[in-house]
Image 1 (cartoon, one colour):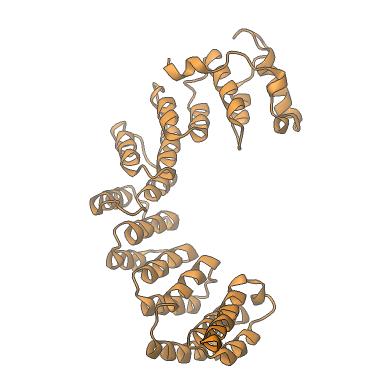
Image 2 (tube, helix red, strand yellow):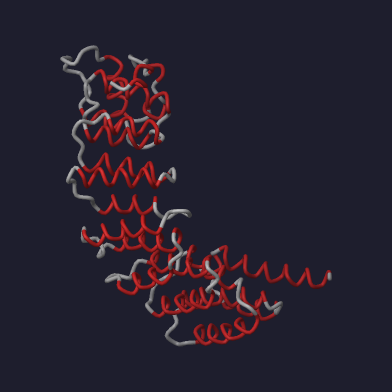
Length: 339
């Protein structure tokens, strides 16, 4: 038994059950079972599903420790479902103790511990957990790779780590999963800043209808100062009838901020043509006009910015990005007048 479990309470006091639990009759019934069960032979003992439900969602630390203590007393600490839920509630140091206390582990506790390690940026430990998963001859699923790639999408992660995971994704047949592919894109873009490999991966993706994949690559171009590549990809995205998300627009505007004056004039011409294109629907025009507002503001042409802003539809003006672009243009003019 883990030494840190000696500090867990042995009983659950009814007065200490959180008010959020008492709001729901089913959870109130389970809590009552926890409070009054005295032996494993009692017919009123909570079931595995009961204990699992108590660990769903956000719960307070005192209540978590109470439930965990009761799990030990009921000899349910080897249950993979319950262990998976427990791992998700603890920081990595305690989550690892829960994980390694399991004698027989299926894929779900592995996914849970890799997720916890990824969220704390412990990519080497996440990779070790993945290697142990493979050593035990368990088959990773899409969530395994999504969590692992999140761990590998941080600055400082080595090229070899990303290549290893990429190789496992290919061998496991998950290159057809767009969410896993987006994780790979993020790893190549953020961790190793290899946009050549990222673009090759993007071009080879069988399903490119996931907007976040486009956003990841556009963001990568913007981060590395390749503004024109970011804008070109954005234009292709619109032609594919995909709707940019707010993150996409932020990345595009970030790319626009590093354009110099000759390139700004070139892109203003191209974007204006796109906005006037009869194939461009109102929503797409709004996205384009937001960029035009920003670029004219960058050139200190506030009247042109206002013209583009007025062309944005009412639904488009619900986005804070359009207002930020217009206000930014006015602010730049105020600075000029003050000078």
